[in-house]
Length: 110
Length: 89
Image (cartoon, rainbow over all chains, first blue to last red; front, top):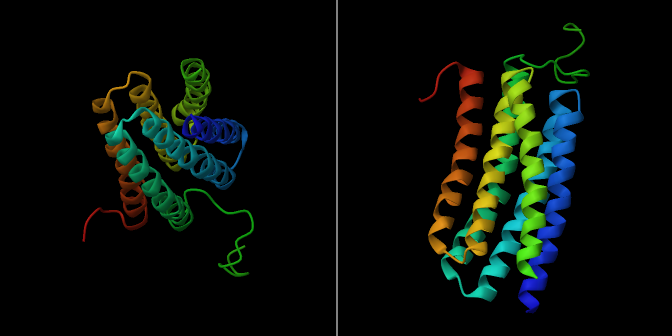
């Protein structure tokens, strides 16, 4: 019973974070702002709910679901910063989206 | 108790997935679409795990792991292609 309550609390926190991230990725007007909103919505809105699913499945005795949920949560926690950093680097390096205030490129390029 | 909570969570995560999908369709640049596809695949993985604890069936949870790995591989390979112009080496 206590594991189900902990899992539902984690799922509720994740639902709020995911909804805020979705609203942010829908309403912001620059790619880098959208990247910020998507990273908040992914780490806060997917890592905690996956742990919550693991708790609820442990209460019900579904041990394969527990293993897959914990493994997926750790993978999300590790791979989301790597992926978002790679996308931001690619968008800046290939000049797909120009930065507003680029401190690394110097004065001659302005 | 838990069935009602899972209905509400399905509604919230489905609404989030719809908002991500709108950005995937009308993204101005290619990186917006890649980012939105990443978020949609993680969202679908979470909904699959919720379905597996709703139906009390372990076989529905197998696809979620591949969706999580696929999101990371999409990010890294798309960034490599946009930066260098090729994938590999």
